[in-house]
Length: 601
Image (tube, rainbow, N blue to C red; front, top):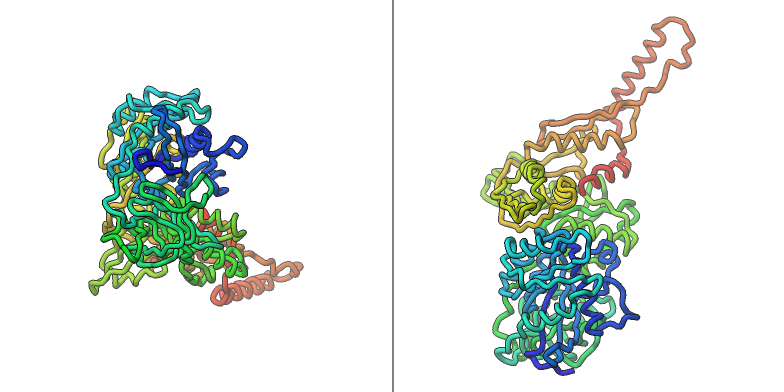
């Protein structure tokens, strides 16, 4: 069906986690008869098991619908359902670059959350019209009046433009579709006929190579044509183009203003990066579409197989996972304690947890993750700078002039009753509160500057606990700052164990070291000699615990007689233990690594 450009609407649904984006998308598909009732299932666009289980969107999902509006015209609606978590904000920004408007969904019971504000800012930066939607108005706890007040006060959007819906019951969906047609503008007229298509996402198909999700701005993208990626420089032949309905439906071409897919035959997903521009080599566009930036991992961790024999399986699984997740970085590394494994980079802690779960579930590999780390900039006395994402690679302390760590600006929305607890948590995590202001009568917004490392460990869990589940967090990177950071080593019987090394602030080194030693003390089996557990900075021990020695009763066969016989046997045992302590090796059981490393990862 050929639809004129003025009757095409490209829009995204943005929201905080679990505010109902995917359910609204489901209702749109039903109302426009894109899916018949017999084919329908909840969260139909979330096709990963993890997405459906956790109730979150991990990957962007486009779909094309045709809607007969009240003005008598048929409109092509290209919807992109976006992730809601802060880890995937780059995917959201690229998805928005493919749109002319957004639906902003707010939960009527929870109100405006931190990620809601962040997503609105992303949309406003790209000068997109925002249609506010209050969802879940059927809930007993729904407070529509407070939500309308928050939309005006916190988001600076007119409350009278809010569309009230219950996606679960289908209430308000026709009105919302009419609002999309009226308030989201059509795509701009192409400046020329040269092909410009934005890659806003991609997946890997093991039979057909990389499948690019594209929005065409000018020109036409057809099958059996040669294309070039402007930023990456790769050339490829397009095998097939088509649209999402919501499954991939092959077509002849994707024209200006349309969203669809292109199967390119490219075998390496890194060659087709999100944000790149597709053009024709014979008639190329003069410059790429704006806004491209490389995805850079924020959090690093070592991934090792639980059983050494599973290394080859892990290697194969990681290579497959990288094909479907362009933001997942991995390279081989070796640990003295854990053996062969991989140093991996993630967008954030949720991304790390999802990767671990996918390895376990999709590839049947049980893994250990080392203590999460971030990228530190280490300035040496000779004037050079090294980027360190693994504590094992930290230069010698004597050669370091200063260490700088990444900072973030955090925006926290919390019920006013818990403000004191939230501020204490921020200060405990070495944060500085910049400002607080009331969002409404019951909620406050707190802005703070914090080290990223303190946030990736357990900040989010602690925030949820303190605020009884009502607090929400969003953050953005704002550069680096020098601080008194040190490498903390864990020594077992005088031998450092590289898997337990971490970079911490000097003030927190003793408490962090003692916490790890106490966990180790509980899982290391007792030997016939005392095992010393130490936490050290350089050569200075800051914490110590002992695993007490087992005592073998060497005097059991002495029945009475002179006491000197027993003393002689006990002295001989004492000397033997002393010698054993000097030469004895402590075999760390796998449970020791799991207990310590899984505790905070």
